[in-house]
Image (tube, rainbow, N blue to C red; front, top):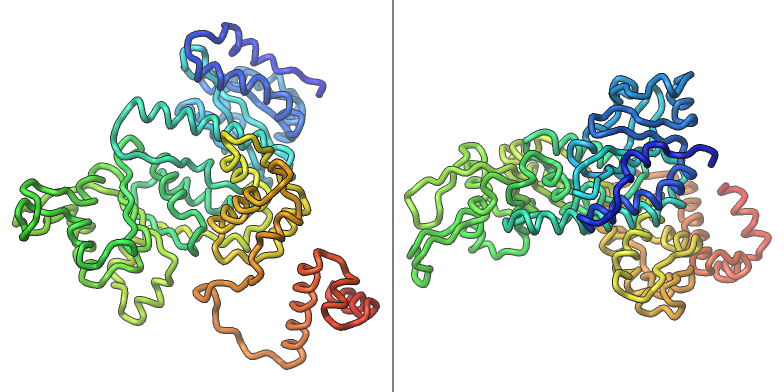
Length: 481
C-alpha cells in the first residue's frame, strides 16, 4: 500500500479516555483501515458535514476523476450521487457489504462511521470491496459484532420499551440474491407501509423484520412479534386485541393489553400469518383498515397506530384460491413484498454465513471457530431444507463433536451433515413430463453427484459405489461438463 490516510490525523488527535465504547470503535477503525484499504478497489473519507477530506487514487480512477485533489472539500453527493455516506454520518450506523450503482457498475461498498472521544460523529470512511469478499469476512464480522454490542448497550440505557436485536448488517450475504433482499429491505425501511416477507422456514424472516424496523422512522418505538402458529386458536383474539377487566370467568380484574396496544406507535410483526383462522382474518383486516381495535369483552374502541410486517412460509396465493386466506387481507398486507431465497439458491454466501455463525457460537469460548474451503464445499453439496437455521445447527454440532479446537474441515462437516437431502414439499412445483432419455440422463447425473459427495470427491471410490469402471465414470463426467 503506497498511500496513507491523512484523514486519520483529523479524527484521531485526542487520547481515548472519556468514552470507552467510542474509543474502542475508533481504535478498531485505526487498526482495520490499512487492511481494508489494501483489500479494496478504492477508499474515501468525509467529515461531519459529508465533505470529502481524502480519496485515494484507485477510487478516483474508478470514478473517472483525473485529479483526486480537485474534489477535496466538495460535498460527497455532488461527486458520487448514489452514495450513502451522508446517511452514515447522520445516523452513526455502519453500512456493511452494501451495493451501490455507479454508471453501469455495481459496486459492493462498506461504510464505517468515525467517533471522537465524546461519542460524537466526526465523519465516515468507505471502501469499495473486491468481488472476492472472503479475505474480509473475519474483519467485517468482528466490526459488526462490536457495533451490534455497542448499539444494544445504548438502546438498553436509552429506553426500556420492547426493541430489536438485529439490523440490516445481520442479514449476512453479498450474493446477488442477498443484495436484492437488502435493497428491498432498505426501500421498506424508508416507507411506512405494510411489508410481506415470503420464504421457507429458517431463511431469516424475523431478522429482516427487525432490521426494517430498526432502520425505519419507528425505530425508537416498540417492535412486537407474535407467532400466529404458536398460539392456540381460541386465544388468538385475546392475544391480538387484549381483554377487558372481567370479560369472562377467571379473567383478571385489570385490563390486559393485546399485541396491537403493546406495539402502538411502532411495528407489529406477524410471523406465520398464513396460519391465521378465517374469523380472525376479518377482525385483523378491520383493525388495519380503521386503525382501531375492540378488546375482548369491551364495547370501547381503542385507536392504534401500528406498522405491520407479516411473514409466512406458505403459498398465500394458493390459499386464496382455495378460500382459506382472505384476498382483501392479502392485498392489505402485501404492499411491499420481499421474497427471501432459500439457502440452496444463495450458496455463494455460505462462506461469509459460516464465518458469522461460527464467531457467534465461539463467543466467550476458547475455540478458533474457523472453517476450511473444503468444509464449505462439503456444505454446498447439501440441499438445506432447514436453511440458515439448519446451517447453524450443523455448525454447532460440528464444533461440539470436533477435536481440533474449533477448526472445521470437510471430515468434521460430513460427520454431522444429514444423509438425506430432500427439499421441503412446499418448495416443489409440478414438473412437466419429459422424454425418457432426458429423465434417465438427469437421474444418472444425480446419481453421479451423490456418489462423488459420498466419496468426498474420490472418483475411484465413486465408481465402485456406482458399480462402473473408473474409465466409464470419466466418460460420463466429460459429457456432463
